Length: 329
Image (cartoon, rainbow, N blue to C red; front, side, top):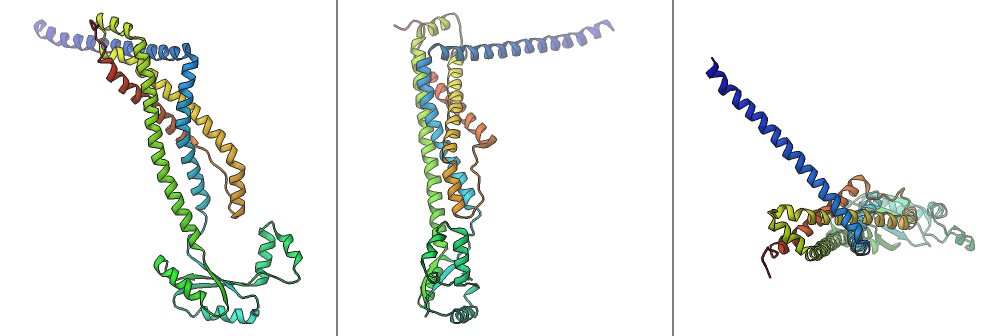
C-alpha cells in the first residue's frame, strides 16, 4: 500500500508546485509591466516641451478625421428625415384662374404615369410662406398675391432615366410655367455626402500613417539617446522583449494621450458649429440636435490612437533595436 501511495502523492505535489510557480511568474510579469508603464509615463514628464510638441501633432492628426466622421454622421442624421421620394413641382402661370388650375390638376389624375397629384392653391402657398419663412413682411408691399399655384405630382416610376423625360413633358403642358424635380437636390446632396465620406476614409488613412511616422520617429530618437543603456542591458542577459517593453509603453502613452487631446479638440469644434447646424436644421423644419462622438465613438478613437502608438513604436523598436548589439563600434 505504501508503494502505491508514494507515486500518487508526488504528481499532486508537483502539480501544486507548478501552479504556485506559474502564479508567482504571472504576478511578477504583471508587476513588471505596471512598473515599466509608470516609468514610461514618467519619462514623458521629464521632457515636457518635446512631449507636448509631439502630443500636439498627434492630437491634430487624430482630431481631423474624428471631426469629419462626426460631422458626416450629424449631416446624415439631419437629412435622414427628408423624403427621398421623387416629386415634380409644377408652378402654374399666375394669370390662370383657380377653376382652370383645379381642372388641370384633375386631368393630371387621369395620367397612368403619376401615382398622386396634390394641388397647393395660391392662398395656401401664401399662408405657408408667412408661417415658415422670415420674409413675410415682403408680401405687405404687394397689392395682390404674387405666389403661383403649385401642383405636386409623384411619378409612378422612380427610375432616374424616366424622371427627366417626364419632367420635360410636364414642362411643355399649357399653363405650366416651370416644372422642377425635387429629387435632384437630394440626389446631389447624397452624392456629396458619399464623396465626403470616401474622402474622410482617405484622409483618415493618411493621417493614421502620419501618426505612425511621428510616433516611430520619436521612439527612434529615444532609442538613440538610450543606446548605452540598451547595450549594457543586453550584456547582462536582457532579452529583446525586456528591452523593447519600455519603448512600446512610450508609444502607447503617446497614442492614448494624443487621443484624449484629439477628443477635446473634436468636442470644442462641435461646440463651435452647433449654432449654425441648428439654424440650418430650422430652415428645413427638421428637429435636430448636434451629437458628439458618443461613448462608442470616444472609446473607438482612444483605442485606435493607442493602437497606432503601439504599432508605430513597435515598428521603430523592431528596426533599430536589432542594430544595437554589444561589442559594436
